[in-house]
Length: 213
Ligand SMILES: [Zn+2]
Image (cartoon, rainbow, N blue to C red; front, side):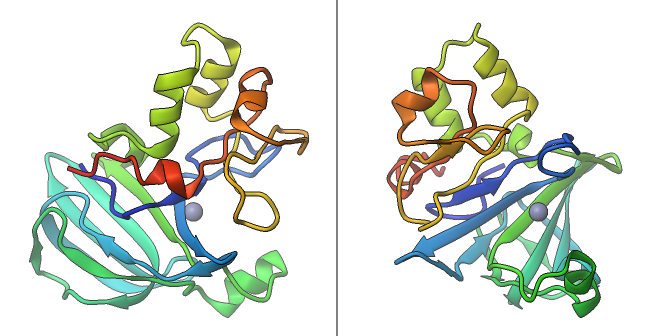
């Protein structure tokens, strides 16, 4: 599969750590401009058939695409969807535009007024939820950085791979490499990160380097 967003920021990884960040069975992807969340086109990560196009209480406008071989993509919070249920899509075809659609009930449950614009994406393999990044052929920004800089034998690397650390941005949402660990301690740059046991935040510049095939 190919990453479904150009120049993405990954704001939340797939992980199963309910203590610090809550369970998150999927990845959240956004784009920022001038410190604001902006909408962006979402592309089909792989060819497939649209088997669901509907309203979901948490996911808002969602798509479920069957890629064959037991693999499916569930994508949520669309503002607009350009394709119909039952249509066949090509890999890389534009599916719609990212939004922040969800239900009032869901917002009320978490006591928030609105959701930031982002794509939530998870996959199913034979009906079981799996991390979509495991099926992306080209490297994501974080994977590129890790490949380049992180010692594969370090505890930090293991934490990243196991999802014990989270991703995000600084409060202004513009600075690159702003990182924090599970105790919400902030770090100024990537080098500082590498000498710590912290999470990684990825900049737009690095996102540019994704080899989107
Ligand atoms: Zn999500």
